[in-house]
Structure formats: structure tokens, C-alpha cells
Length: 415
Image (cartoon, rainbow, N blue to C red; front, side, top):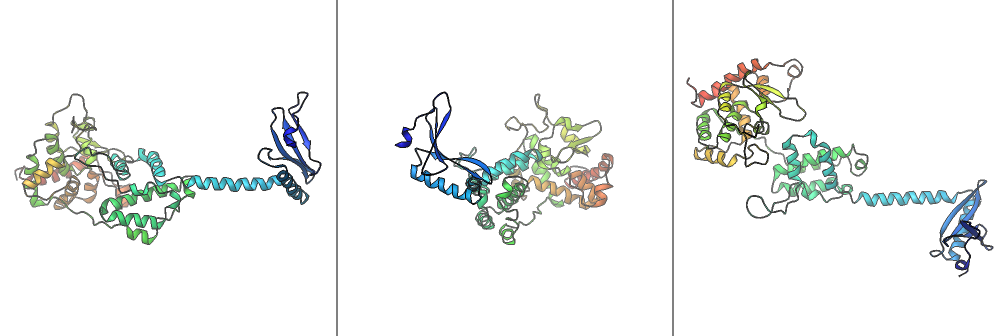
């Protein structure tokens, strides 16, 4: 009641102070807007200081007097009360930041990681990140029912600070039960994201860089046996018969070029006419973002296949499709696998055809470096990296041999 009756400053002053006679250093500051607060004023180390204790509506007069005496005791000991307050504010800030960090989930970090690095990735690699982190529960575009969550989905809502080796082990154990291949890929992608966190000013302090390096974590990741499926020499004839029975000319041409050149599927499906040079008989292929375009020979039979394809008036894609969002053919498996089944052949995937080209070249004892350069593999030896850069004409010599041999075995070329 005493405090609330104190008059506001007169004569145009902004504030006035009313000093407590019972407690030296304590005053009530009243502003011209009638705001009232308790103030402590004292001296420490020969310097004066003034500290606001608090609003009179929050602090009672007795509590303000106790706080003022406490501050005066600190001053008498040569301790600045403001230092204690600053230390407490720092602790509060750290506590607040800790609570904020707990809200940062792996999903938040993963989305930022993808956005920061997607320009360095191929379309396929980016699609893997999107599919593996898909939460599921949406209506299927094809068929009935809902989509299932990706292999990374169960990690997305886990706070980054709570991801431990045990977290990764439990996650991998669960995912491996139903889809070991996707689980192993998801682990490699999650590991890359965790490694990326170590380059981030904030995230590097939220997760241990070695969380995925423990042996028990690596043991939980399924070890996949390498796929060695490929078209054998004695299967070539039936394979070409099966593929040529496919009605879609885009599909069967794409498949034949795949086994005759061994390209990566995505780079061939998205091939454009601007990448073809019919004059100098060459094809420019871009496999990966970090690699420059490479030139491979346009062998005679491949040229024949390319020339017979119909052109689209509004598309530059060679294997164009009006049904696909990308503008070029995407999924050819249905017609292809049906054709293989009718001929009693195994289900050779499109990637198996790439492997087939490499394996079939072994019959002719073609230099390994030549096959690797045609397929776009990185050089594995010092000589290949720094000294071998075969011109396209030299590649053509060997590549034509491979093509002629495959066609003869398939019965498409006279012996």
C-alpha cells in the first residue's frame, strides 16, 4: 500500500526514486507512466551499480528488502551481483537450447541434408532418398490399399540427440526381417547423413560421429550376396527372340542396346537425339553428376536400331513416352518379363543386361579397360587412371567385335 501511494515524477521528469530508510541501497523507481519497480543501488570495487530487482506487483516489500540485503552482502565481499545473474542467465540459455535441440528430429536433419546435396546426386540416388524416407499411408497410385513406409521412416521422428548405437541396431533388426536389401541401403544413406552432420555447426554437437561405427552396429546390417545373374552365351538366341516379340518398339530397342553396350539404365532411357552423332558414329552419355560426359562408339547394329525408331515432333528423347511424367520410358518390366517367361528364360533385370555385356566380352578376351571405359566404370589401376585414354575409334574396333559376336550367337548375323 505504501509503494502504490508513491507519487509519479513531476516537473516533466521521466522517473523519480523513493529510498527505503530501513534498507540502505533499496529504492522504488516510479516513472511518469506510473510503472513501479524495486531498484538496488550500491558500489563494488569502487564502482557504482544499479540493478532492477523486479516489479512491485510481483515482489513484496519484505522480499525486495531481503534481495537488496543479499546484493549488498555480495558487494561487501567484492562480488558484482550482476555476474551471478549473468552466470544464471547463461545456464538458463543452455537449458533452453538443450530443450530446443531435443525437438530437432532425424527427419528434420535428413530433409536439410537432401536439399543441400541433391544437386550432386543422380536422379536414381535422389529417388532412393525420397522413397526410403517416405512415411507411407497414402493411397496407392497403382492397385488398391495404402503405401507402406520406407525403410528410413521409423527413424524420422527420433530426436537427433537420442540416436545411439542401440537405436540403429533395433532399427536395422526390425527392417531386416522383411526387406534386407532396402534395410542395408537405408543404413548406408543414414550413415552418410550422420557423417554430414559433423560438418554442420549445430548438428555436430547433437550426435556422436562414431554412433554407426561400432562393430555390433555393423553386424546388425544385413550383408547381401553380390548378384551374378546374367544372360549366358547359350541363352542369347532365345533372349533376342523373346525381346523381339515385344510389341513396343521403344522397349525392345532399349533392351537390345542395353545388352550390346552395357550402359546404366537411367542414362540410356533419358538419352536425347542431341547426344547422338550419326556422322561420326558416336554416342555421348552422361552417367553421374560428378562425371563428365563420355563418348562411346555407335556400332553398326545399334545405329540400325536407333535409326528405325520413330521421332516425336515435340520431344528430343530417343525413347520417348507420352504416358510417362518424365517424357521417356520408365518401367518396361511387365512386357519384358512376360516375354522372358514365354521363352522359359530367367527373369533377367535391366541391370543384369549391363552385367551380361561385361561377362560376354570375356569370350573374346577384350581388354578389361576397354570394357570398363565403354560401360563407364571408374578406372581401377594407376595406368588406367592417368595414362590410358582410348580414343573412340579404338573403342569402336573392340566394341564392334563384341557386337558381332553377340549377334552371331543370337542368330542375327551370318557366321
